[in-house]
Length: 74
Image 1 (cartoon, rainbow, N blue to C red):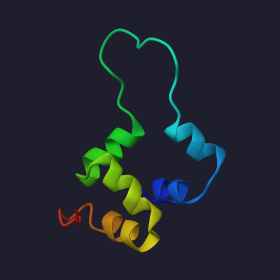
Image 2 (image 1 turned 45 degrees about the vertical axis):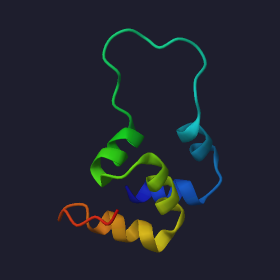
Image 3 (image 1 turned 60 degrees about the vertical axis):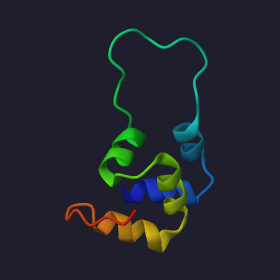
Image 4 (image 1 turned 90 degrees about the vertical axis):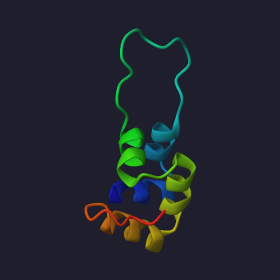
């Protein structure tokens, strides 16, 4: 979770890969779990809220610090 905040604040190749889309058709079967999906599920926030919060280091640290105790701010 902390690494995601780091990626969002810095412009790097990792950030481009993380936010990139792949052209073409989707494969058959159950959709794979994604890292971003896991972050969204764990933080119980919408993806746009997660992205905005990760840009402000102090707010992101508050969110990641309270994940285990059920008091994550929304």
